[in-house]
Figure (cartoon, rainbow, N blue to C red):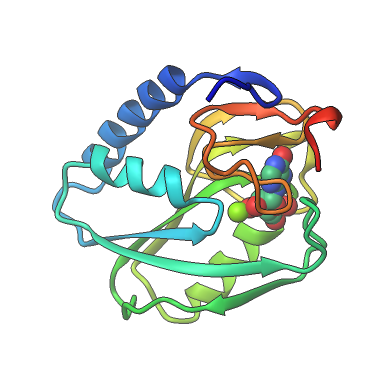
Length: 178
Ligand code: IMP
Ligand code: MG
């Protein structure tokens, strides 16, 4: 390991503690209801897998792969589903799992387009929330951490598809890029 990339702002321990709390709340809220935990890839891969194991319910796992045109971090607002769910969601409770809600456009688009398939409910859980950058009103029912407007990497979040494997959340230093 040796080198630490960026300035860690949320440690591995803090992330894991918060995920246990979210898992307990979700377990209580969805008791007795059929739940599909839908990870939004790639960013949510780490959070989704830890959150799933913190929920004590017989849930189903599914994923969506989305791309927001204009990578380099910031979403242009045009969201495309590149790889769709494998489960039928009609009559099921859906919990979307995201790495971060920034402009809000991705979650807003996903909620709207999945509602057409008539799930019983559709809610969202995000590890990180950057409310300062919101461009659209969207309700996020479960939030891990609210953070200020900095570009962050780690624990699934990337810069040009790198740094996703850092076990903590860090603010990317310009000197780290490349
Ligand atoms: P949205 O702007 O809420 O639609 O978020 C779109 C996507 O942009 C998120 O799911 C992330 O993949 C990415 N994103 C937004 N802010 C950050 C950040 O600070 N670091 C890494 N990725 C980000
Ligand atoms: Mg994402």
